[in-house]
Image (cartoon, rainbow, N blue to C red; front, side, top):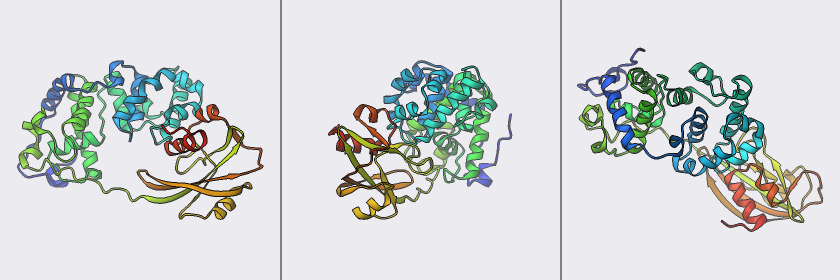
Length: 365
């Protein structure tokens, strides 16, 4: 068993008089609680290492409800790592559309290639091997190892941090590095003594997502309520403290719709930055709004008759993006001119897809 980590009372602002809870009792209660209280989620209905890997990457920074809607269709398109590797990155990114953080789609495809080429098409079954896959970090490796292979590997995400911080009555910000390391140590203690590490880890995440939620938790429904240090200390509503929200960068994106018959001109965004590598209308990015003449001058080909037709705003985690849409004419023939079917097969950000559908094809739903 690993070192239990820092003492929450002396190093992390724990509450005096709160006893440390033994891991075996916590694990046993959580494993008994989970089967009757777990949500019916598609990746839980049919288990496989590949489905577990895909679901974990999808769920990173994406709402569960959105992944629920997309998961089975995505798995039907890419039923195994070989199918995904063969389909190619563009196909994966296009199928990922609407889930956001598109870098995950590229990493998932790269992981599929590695699984095909280095592991005979089978998801590896050890934490060290999993950690070598693109896009797989400490949490994802532990999740796959425990859920798919029932190995005693710990996991720590926002839900787990909240549960452990409350159990140990730790008054710290949820992104405090000492708290996070303490949670990894505690999670490992629990995984080691669990009857089924996979069930234990899923129950920790489920408890945090459905009962031990941010703000006011539903303590009466918690299987650990009588063992919760925060509850005894009367601080369950306030710990862990929220992390500081990120400051959003202001970005103005000036997009130009150009037609040639039933085709529109599209291009791929740069490989770094916002929506890296996705397809878009030719666009000029700036820190402030540009007049049509400046937009035309910012393109690497000539456009005529440029006029502004609409503007709208989208809030991302780290950016506030103001879209300014223009229409115009060009005699340029080279480039990627796409009809509706061809454009639909290319990966775009959700705002760009809605813009193209509405302006180019008249689709409003």
